[in-house]
Length: 66
Image (cartoon, rainbow, N blue to C red; front, side, top):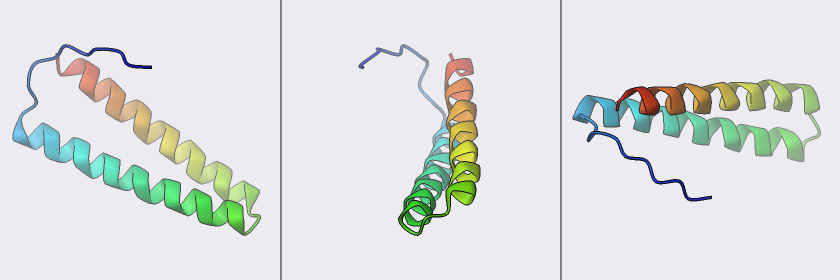
């Protein structure tokens, strides 16, 4: 789903903060894949919750940057 987002350009600091969160999200997703492959549903659920919360924070920050 492509939704156009019209916001003011991000500052360098905002871009760096967003990139740090995306890198953290990437790490969480890799951990979830590994946990899933080894049959650890509880740990995977905890990591999935953390990933969801991180995405939510990033989306809220980007929406507020208008």
